[in-house]
Image 1 (cartoon, one colour):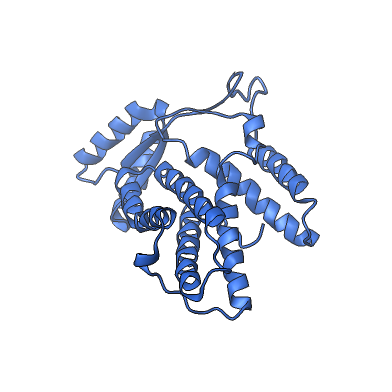
Image 2 (tube, helix red, strand yellow; image 1 turned 45 degrees about the vertical axis):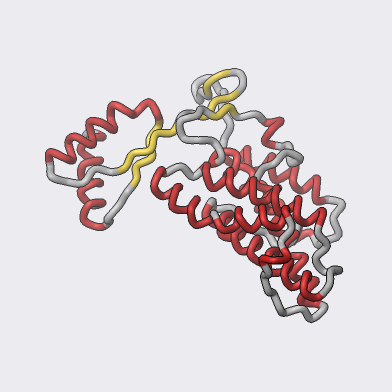
Length: 257
């Protein structure tokens, strides 16, 4: 059978079972996408939304299995995980927990590096950047989530259960953070409408940066009772949005790092 005939049967099944469906194709399949769309219309079937992604290349040029110039997914995960384990080696935690965190950090870093790039932009894969955990990437967002979890754990240990947001107490940094939190549903709808998951990645980086600005200049647990409950409400809301955003991207929202 021809590739196109199998795809026609596949899209007949999609029409019978789903209201909406998206095809992800390489940018070199644009003509094929047009042909498939027109054929489905002739058959009185709904065509898919097609999102074209550019290719991943290496600094020295395009990948080529024939010439042995490529990077396998397993090799990539193993190398990034090894680097994460090296960084975690000085942390006081058991080896099982280190292994679990390193795995989540490695997969998160790889997923994020791909999803943060707009579909129409080519990706040049660079080992040096892939293994650089100092730059703002998935682990920066995961760490921000873990920091929020840590603040809340310490609050619970001291018996705090009352989270009460008070708009009149907001500082400039708090207001910036709260406004960003309120925009999460907007970005979700925008991603659905435009089929551009990179928008969520960009949003989460901006949110993490705003949260860390808030954290470094605003004591939470050592504040007065009213201010503390207000700031705990902001921390908890940030935790929820970061957790949901990371989960949407398929990245584990770690509670400890």
